Amino acid sequence: MTLSNVGPTLVLGGARSGKSGFAERLVEGSGLSMHYVATGRAFDEEMRDRIVHHQAARQGKGWTTHEEPLDLVGLLSHIDAPEHAVLVDCLTLWVTNLMMEGRDMAAEFATLAAFLPGARARLVFVSNEVGLGIVPENRMAREFRDHAGRLHQIVAEKSAEVYFVAAGLPLKMKG
Image (cartoon, helix red, strand yellow):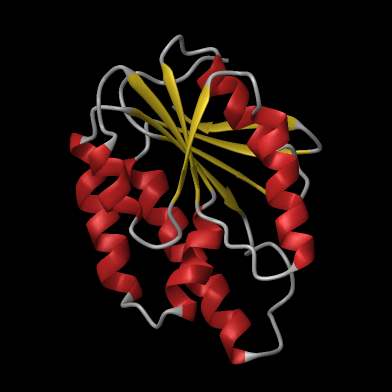
């Protein structure tokens, strides 16, 4: 599989589905300057370990890493160039960060949606599909699921290609 040259790519999947590895391989095969945008925050030791694991997996492969938990469009605007392939991992952590900061979700999503059609870099977004399970028992978890679902619809609509990854196997849904 190759990276789309006509618009963004969205890679969805569940936890430990292989979505990040698949997205990394798409970018690594592009022949472009590779940029990794990490949206995660290390709030605890387990998350620090996950971040270190992801960093180690990319080490020595030519990635430039950018850490940006909130101003995703600002960072993307800064590194937006046709010679760049940019992997954003992941949108659901970005949603979490926005919620924790009390940000206006609709405005943040609209800003991203407005940016995507004019982007010059080849963009790949990774995100966790969270709408396939049971209805969460608490309000915050339901709001998170709803925000993530809305964001996925927005990014999928603006994307040239959409993949769903399960058990390490990508299923092309669009493009």
